[in-house]
Length: 241
Ligand SMILES: [Zn+2]
Image 1: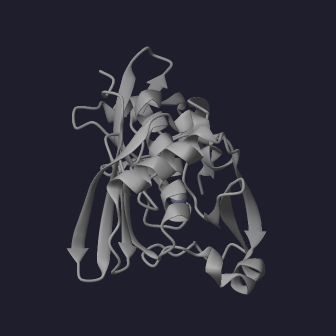
Image 2: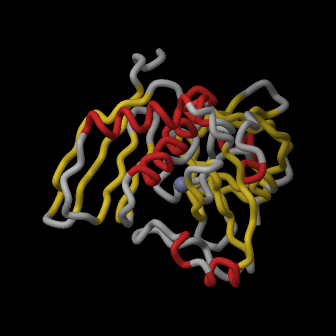
């Protein structure tokens, strides 16, 4: 089990950690700030700093084969001899990239509030976010962009809390996603609340206030299938270097 520091505090950029496993597939730590690909959100990249002054570049983060495992995928040229089991490292994420994931992820929850239909696909990257809604009605790009602008400007607080599985079962309408079911078997489920706007199970990393999302626009609406409408979001400002 890796302690998932990002679940309680998405603003952590680095942490001290100890290597607990290393093999051809990657490195596992006792604790981490690296978010593993999941719930549509891309895995983090960054570096593991060893005491020797040498860094090992992390190119992606994935869930491991066993529940609770998080695998940091090393760059192909990484010197894994730097990361023997027991080695202390500083694990540091690429914050510029992750912060874009957080802004987009919170924006997708705002979109869920604007489009009251089940979600059957989701992808959140540093460059765009897309949500597939199970619906047949047409959607209007301009109306959605304006709706997002209003919710961003509204400065709604964003926070998480844990509820019991029993509480979730009593409120099945909370689950918006058809494609991603909340993880079961831990007795509790993490829910994200955008104050007054949206409440749903989610394990992702988010900004703490909708104002932090900044200018976001609907760049494309596609009819992906007879019963699916895909909405693609982008940031209004140019991508940073
Ligand atoms: Zn989410």
